[in-house]
Length: 76
Image 1 (cartoon, rainbow, N blue to C red):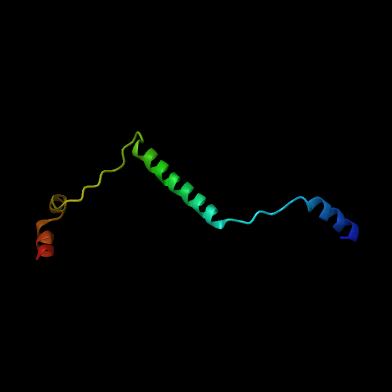
Image 2: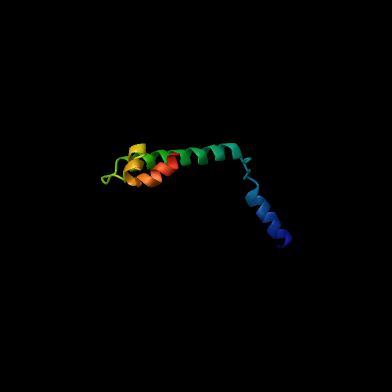
């Protein structure tokens, strides 16, 4: 780069000023977009046409699924 090129570049960039970066605002914006995406995904998943698999968590389901000998040994 010659001296003349540097002078022309300085003339072109004379009016430009770089604003200081604000990383806190950028991090908050990314976090907000992430949370909105989670909320929209949960909302859309809740109203799908196909219901998901139903999971039952109870002691009655365990008692009917396991043989009595195994259940008796585990309960002791």
